[in-house]
Every structure is written in C-alpha cells, then in structure tokens.
Length: 319
Ligand SMILES: [Fe+2]
Ligand SMILES: [Fe+2]
Image (cartoon, rainbow, N blue to C red; front, side, top):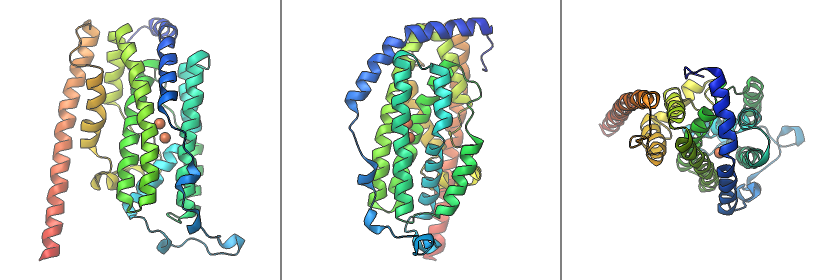
C-alpha cells in the first residue's frame, strides 16, 4: 500500500467496507446479469478459413499467412496474452474481495466472462493463421508462468485500479479491432469491448459507493492508482516495444488514457466536486490534479509529435 496509515486501521476499514458494500455488490451483480447478453465465441470465428498444420498433414504457419495489419496483430497478441493471465487476476481479486456472498458470486461470474475473451481471441487467431501459433504458445507459457502480481493493493486500490483497467481494455480491444482491416476480427473485438465496458460499470459503481462511505481513503486509493497505473500486461516480454507501436498507431496512447479512460471515470465519481473530504482526501486530490495536468501536457505533446511525423512521411511520399 502507498497510503501512510496504521495497518490496523486499514484492516478495520476494509472489513467494514466488505460488509457495508455487499448490498451494492448484490444490486450491481443483478444489474450486470440483466444487462449482459449471452454470446458464443464460436460464432465469431471463420472456421471455413481453417486448415491443418504440418503435424496432421497440412502446412505450418508462415509470415505470409497472416492477413492482419502488423500493428493490429501485435496489439491483438498483447490483448490475448493479457486475457490469458486470468488465473492470476482471479487470485488477486478473490484475495481482495473474498469468496463469500455476493462478492464471491461476482468474482466467479467475472472470471467466467473474462475466460470467454481469451477463448474467442485464440480461436480466431489460430483458425485464420493471424499469428504464429508456436510463438503465441511460447509467449503464453512465459507470460502465465510469470503471473501477475498487483503489488498487495488494498481493496479500495483494487477497485479503483480495475475501474480504469476495464475501460482501458475496452478502448484497446475496440481500437485494435478497427485497425485489423478484418471485419470479422473487428466484430469479435467490439463484442469483447462491450463486456469490458460492463465490467467497468460494475467496478465504477462500487467505487462510487465506497466514496460515500469512506471519502478520504477512497480518494487516496484513486490517487494511488492513477499515479501508478500500468496495463495488466505490462510485465510481458517485449511490452515496451509493443506498447510504443500500439501508441504510435493510436490504438492506445497517453491521450486516450487521459481523455477516454481516466477522465470519464473521475468525472463519474465527481472527484473534483466533492465537498466531503478531510485533509487527507484533500491532499490526495491535489496530488491527483497535479499529476493529471502533467499527463495531459505529455499526452498532447505525444499526439503533436505523432502528427508531425505523419505529415513528414506524407510529404516524403508525395515528393
Ligand atoms: Fe477481458
Ligand atoms: Fe473485463
């Protein structure tokens, strides 16, 4: 934890919130189940494009097999490997929320929905030969064996983190789909993005209720998670290089992170309008505001540089 509090107080607050927020979890779980539509990964996979690999008498993958835009392919693989790490995420949220009552039901439901995402993306990529299946499997082994560790976040930090992270994955899946150049992949990723949005709504509503119950501790958790935010797949090999390609292509960049992920959620919580904060909450809000101003500046600079580079490239091609 980055909040400087007496651990006993933190533990007491967590158990009070686990109890007091349970009706909110229950209500939002019901709302979530009503809002979700059943869907099946097999519907989104063009099975007729599939063929055997050499082991069963066909031919093994070659780079020319993939029809996907190369950057979108990198992004799709990053998104799939991220989804693959579900056992680690399950462990983190089950540790944070427990397995009892409505909290436990949510953990189970969420895990099952996330599992569907990995199934759908892998089936699509393997059947269409969108990427090298041998490399994909080796990367999955490496990434899952390393696992994901959230760094012992408190319950409030976990809820704040996943509120942003679910929206971040929604934006990333959506924009990856648009960049693939394949209408089938675009449809699949748009479908997955809808789920991520509903996950975000669940966590966002839960944190809004936490804000009302414990405004200072919640504001500190939000500040901590905005300041140290990293995508869940940040630990995978080659992530720095892949995420730079993804940012340059405008699939997920600092500007989208600031404008389309952080700000809508912070606005929903009325972070900058709250009048119920004590000195600790006020201090956290000041840190948050300073960080966001700096991030916005960096994001704008990044987009300007990207546009200038695109203009230079266009000028060179037309010369
Ligand atoms: Fe997912
Ligand atoms: Fe999700």
